[in-house]
Image (cartoon, rainbow, N blue to C red; front, side, top):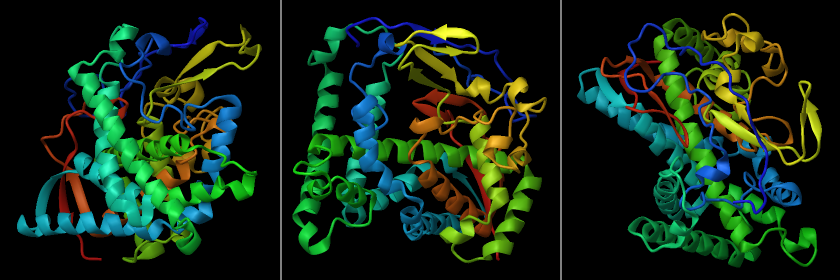
Length: 430
């Protein structure tokens, strides 16, 4: 908690309709509203979130220093090298689906939300840690448990001293945090010890270590060991959680818009047939790209983001003093008719036909990856991964939504289907 109080400005926009039409809703409202009216520091978790010092949370000069190291790892050309790893992971899990379809006599019901969580975990481990992917998977499992523990009391009234008491929950958090840091430290030290003979590696960790070497920046590395560990934690959180749920919502919308499914499959057949998609082929998949963008508009991973004014400024005729925290309700902005037109509540991928900046009445209206200098550094990674998975599904399966599906989006850390995504898959011969 900051030692000095800060002014908070919260923008609340009217609630909006859910884009999935014609289905009975149960449980929580379908559209994620801007409901977090309690300032961030008054709902601080019992334990600070993992990766609290990573590039996502750093400010000012600290943020610039972190971004200088992390940014090269997400260069588009370097990410394209990782497409083979992504497609191998996707192919492996889809082989399991195909086996289940065969056992089911040509069709099988599969809960895809959980499967996508496993898939994106399998992808982030080798792309982040290369040959150390097995250790990376262990880090991921501990990190995921730590993440849910850290955020489980996010909306509770907090008594600051309680976070230091040896309660059962705090003891588990401390134990998991120690395990995660220990495993990551061993992976990093091993990589540094082998750098003279094997180099740093072409995975995300290797690219990051290379970017912060003392040779490049004087006598001291640009980031300390603890800071590198926090960035590794960020890889897992940003590279897994958001990607898995983006895939879930994409499959939901494909299943409820069969005409779009058919058009996307035709584009996939035309551009890559039944071959594994490469980085160059992915750039040609315009309809797939528009479909993913529209999915992100309606089901953005984060319903709100916050920004602090670094100086006195004026926004829409309102004076905003330095230090004011602005809460931006992404979910509401993404469904605002004044911004997106009368069909703002409808699913319409063609609105992105001329690009993101021309899709709405304001060039910066699309905020799923935030915007400006602090936009999501891993957005290209997420989009490449999503395109590969969706393309490979369209090549191999037709599908429809199971009658067991209950539409109840739940906003816990990121927006996810509360009761999963049961889908019936049928094998295709292409």
